[in-house]
Length: 401
Ligand code: NAD
Ligand code: MG
Image: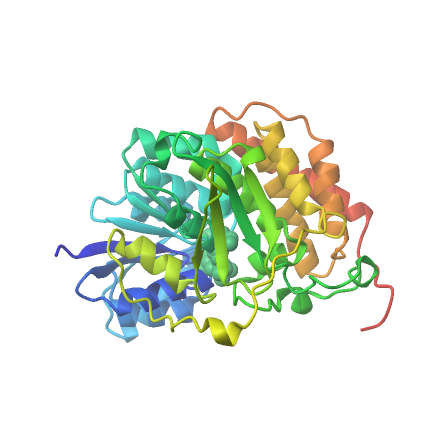
């Protein structure tokens, strides 16, 4: 078996760490070629000492110098590079076979796209890249013969539940609809009045998954599901009308596909991202992910509940952006990233997150998204509009915590 060189973009994050955990179980299959992090020098250094990649990329030169000193002391000969262009270089490097795209947010778009343009096997966790630039990204995959593997657990479940020839067209292969499951996040049962004062730590305390802070807040507002609707649209060429969301608090059924004959295919498993990561890494083989057996009797019941669109308006906004098309999903994504940042730094209330997104989406001229610069411009303008909007309604807590 040929050993495949894996580049992990965002290796110090939640997905990155899980990816390295799976890779470490299969030294006969995978070799870590390159790692990257934003600023966590010590964590990246420890990963370099363990996996001996050829390259490590870190965001800026100051961190790069610190990492070089640290690695020299440990006699680790990993070459340290700095900056965004270095991320795209390691993603597209001739010796990279597989790229795990696990940088969070719009920051991951250039390197994810570089991997697709270089025809790599792209394991895509960075959903924001597809939300922002879906058409451009999918064109790059097709035109350059890249292999795109969805790592988001829902999309991985859908991929596993579809026939291999789904690319012929969902209707043609007998699909009636795609059903995305949503845990409902930590505030699933809270009333709308109880949501204003929630804190970042409460929002990040997800009942089933341990994730980075941005996606944790997205799960709490349910914008994560909205982004996933757009992601499913691009991955599976599914119109908005064919994509449904159902709340499933146990996070065991990871998503479903309903066929014309009434059959519903689902993928189940413990809520552990190492399962979809191992599926993407091993495909078409099944490999050990280190995930324990699913004990359904212990789980007891699997519930399914209709989404409350009033308490969680972000899903509606995402459908709206998808239907508007053009730069609308990039605007939605940028406004969301700015609003989530403001919430995490305690300058915006939780319930103002969807208000900011809605105002920015409705206050922005939507244009066709033909080139990457159309997307980048829309992203930048929406960020400015979101910051201005946030400055007009700073956080005021109604009660002491
Ligand atoms: P995280 O915050 O834990 O990790 C993010 C990683 O990206 C870190 O390594 C960080 O150093 C790096 N990074 C952040 N900003 C960067 C920048 N400007 N330049 C370069 N690197 C940067 O996030 P996560 O939870 O691992 O999520 C990563 C991606 O995977 C997100 O797009 C998320 O939506 C998606 N995803 C995550 C999960 C999950 O369970 N964590 C599930 C599905 C999808
Ligand atoms: Mg998901």
